[in-house]
Length: 322
Image (cartoon, rainbow, N blue to C red; front, side, top):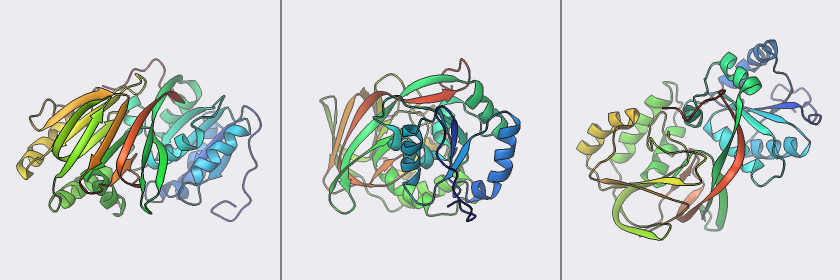
């Protein structure tokens, strides 16, 4: 059933477009505005069946079902969490459909890397006329909150450490002031009570250890509502950009955060950038991990690149956003 109680649209015919809509995204405004958004998409020439997410993780199921049903284009209407679910639903499938985005979340960090507009008209134009870019995903093996071993994938940025707690705090707010303000508040709220942990890190066998606040494993460039955390990351080079954040002070944080928004924070004496295909993180105490803004569990964790795993529609002839 749809959120309004009407019958769900049946699966798409082969090659057809399917809209995968998260009505809870953008503080619930996506669900309220969907009739208008659908009309504007149709007026621009983009029409198809519509499937609504009804619970966490549901978009992964819907994406996989639509792909197996022969859909040629999946249009994700939601935020980074929606992209995360769809990527997890599609990974490993042969003959994947193309994926287009109508960014509707408060963070929309994934779409920033590719220069995909938040406006419905521009996003629809990319869905219809954009180039297909085949990008990498990350595969993550970690400890779930119930103590069992688990695996998942991420499309944009993952991390282990304080940023997992920051994402959780930000997600618990209404985000009424927007993604940037919500994440900024969460950064300083969490940092005030967080202590650096002893972390053991391996990147393709190259080891680092010491007291750190975070290890960021980036496929895309942005997270946290516009923080350009790894400004040179390329989502199709079969490599992660791995940023360690050492035992920074409050003064370090205050001075550095504005630079991160501009992508001018590196080099930094308490940070190191590494690159590799396999990353493992262990810690003296379990640390929360974060995958595309979701918090599924804790360290120990291993990240592996899955090359050429998702077909994404991007602006025509676009390079990664500068």
